[in-house]
Length: 375
Image 1 (cartoon, rainbow, N blue to C red):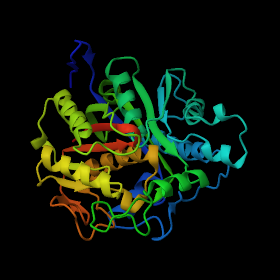
Image 2: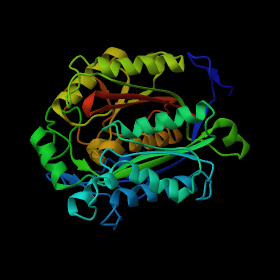
Image 3: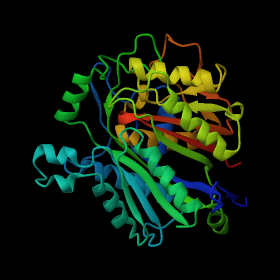
Image 4: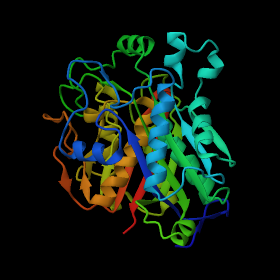
């Protein structure tokens, strides 16, 4: 497909996703996670405040161990060698190596920042291209994908390794979220009347983005095409979303405009769905206002927990698998919906062609990522 021109007249090339990798509490790879998610499984024990990633034995630099495993899976999945010298790298983390700082393994706070995982991935793949490390609260993963999408679309890179990682189950984070009243007392229940918070999780996801022309030249089979991305800050409150949801609504309108489509063309929404009282209410109101009550709505944190900055990258991988397989994943924990929307409560064979992914982060971060099927 030929590129299109953006508002500045710069040619934007078609960007596709050719490989995915995922590590979380449901599995150490994307396929295992997807199978268990469709089965409605939960990766943590109800009543416990945390959901740890499986089969990861690293005690130190756990965030790096998570993202390196996801990166290796994504490269193999894309049919690429580990060493990708010409690839760009965008890896985000909302907490970096904070866990190592708290345990005393790291003494220098500067070494614990979000740059550490990005640097580790750049070293792993031998990247000689541009590298960026982002920290945008819970929207970090989506922001990383969006930046990589721009780099490829604008011709800065032919290929970019993108994603996010967080291993933020630490005493300080648990104390902070308890103080804020955002941790669930039992099961995380997105959009349910009994929702009272999220389960803090760890995980990582990596995606391989390529110019469509490059993917076609090497006969790769993409999962999806990125049709649009938008981000904005609602400038309202350090932790709470703007009550009218205008921050999220604004980025959705921007994303639709970039893609040249309307909200009625969306076949499903993968919602942020944290299970907190305020966040879910705001997001549900925006969904009804922008799409209408009939759009299918999925959310994954009831099963996977909330892995902070990594969560939106993980959800992007799951969006790719939904487009590839034709199934929408269920909202685990939702039994008594608090809103009149078409929530996906059991895995649904709907063969979606266009999915919108929402992210809402502390500090007013809002992102919209639009994926379309390849076939």
